Length: 80
Image (cartoon, rainbow, N blue to C red; front, side, top):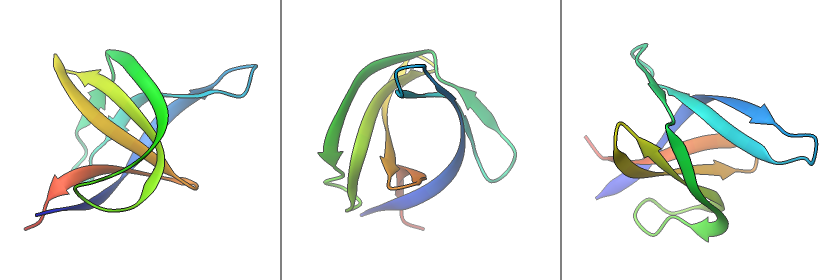
């Protein structure tokens, strides 16, 4: 089962108002730069619940979802 894992994100705001995430900050201090944003769309997290803007990002060569729900960022993580 998956759950929402809220994370800190460094983001850039364009002149047109688009929010572009640049880097994910994990709670243990690790930082993961986003290599490329592949897609941006409104979507629900089918694994963890919740909905918002879903960013499909390439991080370390792998495709991952990052969600902006209202004013908080989350990723889908395994429950512990």
